[in-house]
Length: 419
Image 1 (spheres, rainbow, N blue to C red):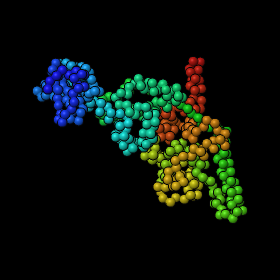
Image 2 (image 1 turned 90 degrees about the vertical axis):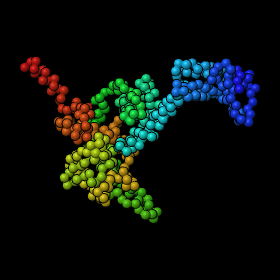
Image 3 (image 1 turned 30 degrees about the vertical axis):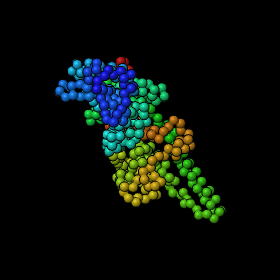
Image 4 (image 1 turned 30 degrees about the horizontal axis):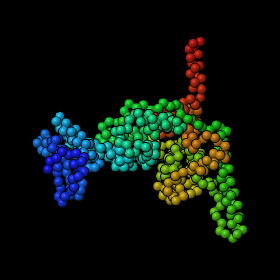
């Protein structure tokens, strides 16, 4: 059936028991297909370069009017006249849309990066969590659509919210690593951050260490805290005894809990908190006075051995005698259930307050250890080895603490000028 397909004509056509096609009498290939269900579909038929006839669906009536459908058919006819296979192009566009949908940050995380990170990165779960939190507005964005302009805006907002440049760089590095894997695995063609430079920051960093007076206050606070806990237990037991209740174990051992040995061990070894939490008794050789940080639990991924000085040895020896060792793979400082200890934040904050230490974190005990070594004229490369840094650059932040290192340099210039 042929007719000029106008709005008036199409609106009057009723569906029958079988499908019906009406071919436009003025534009070759333009047609309206009417289903027995009543739906009306615009289409354009054409012959492709391979000689096969194809039908391009233009839309449904009345969502697409007769005039709109005619314009779409005219545009398709023009493309066909220029040698373009409109059906193939539409399929390519759809495939590209589908590919972009599959290649969003969220999809790549779920299907490729997260399984890899959990299997190969020691802190894989943490890295994934941070990416999802720091870039939550980009999770449904195709990775290829992320560009340096977006990053600059993100960095600006991060700085305005109070984050320091080093923190912004670190957060962005996680996403950069994800995108690098996407390039490596040929999910995207190029890295969206190619040529992007990190924010500049003071590479000397924050070096907070204890003065002689502060270290003395910290040590006194450790003892005072344990004394207060013992007194509190004794008072509580007297209260229970007066009421005929079973008494709790008295706190008469050398250590009340794990806080004092952990803090003193950090002061004498420079171990990270996570490295202390991961320590097992098989990693400690008290007879040889050595401690081993296993590469699998170290931040650098490299195993290192540290000698135990007199205080570190006494602490570990006393702690072992107090609690005993059931198995060689038992944690040195287990949590309440015997598994890995996860936090000492509340206890540490209470201790810092008792010692009247301001702006001093647990991690600063590591800075204190390094600073004292440098002040004692220990070679920076030795300090690097003990701290477990792969690069000397991380240790250079302590160089200014070396005794008279600036004064002696300036004095050499003076002697060269004035003999």
